[in-house]
Length: 230
Image (cartoon, rainbow, N blue to C red; front, side, top):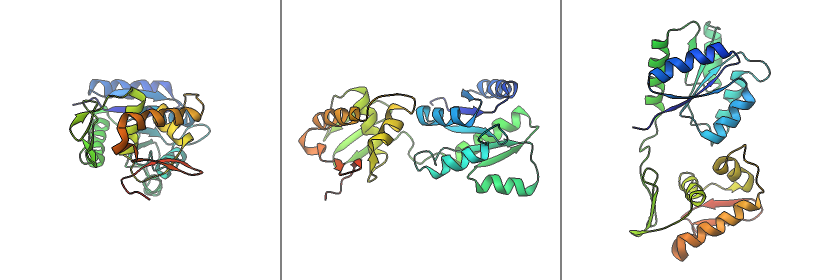
């Protein structure tokens, strides 16, 4: 089983260290951010499996970041546990309405934290996680990093694989070049948008005539992956 990655967002370093220690002892891999802006960059770049998010932070609050992440369809599926000293019912309701999957009131024990985290991950785990994706004879295995066309292997570079994996897990949605740069290359990677066009051409060439048509150009927008031809 792959190690789950947890992003800890809190402006107080001692609290981040305490949380990271408890989670690493339980077998989780941890990333840390001390503000909402840094946290958002890590979410885009690294796609953590869960976010532990402090409600009260200077600047953009945790609850504002939660709302932002839940409104974006590409990050809305990442579970969020809010950490806060606010324990009354109205605040809990406010946190859950912002999109949080759970709510832990400080102080709490490491055992409670790990138990609640495990429960949220079980509830929010997508069906068929890590499963092979098949579209019109094109098969992608995200675990072995193999791609086949009607049973025959296809060779392509790592960026083209990431691009195809993203497309096949987000079918029938149009994405701008900027969005593709953010979610395939990473929000902190500074490359020109025409880089996307170069890799799209390489991807289509690797897929061959039969499956290149699945990568559709959307005029004035960018690209989409679809088995519905227009």
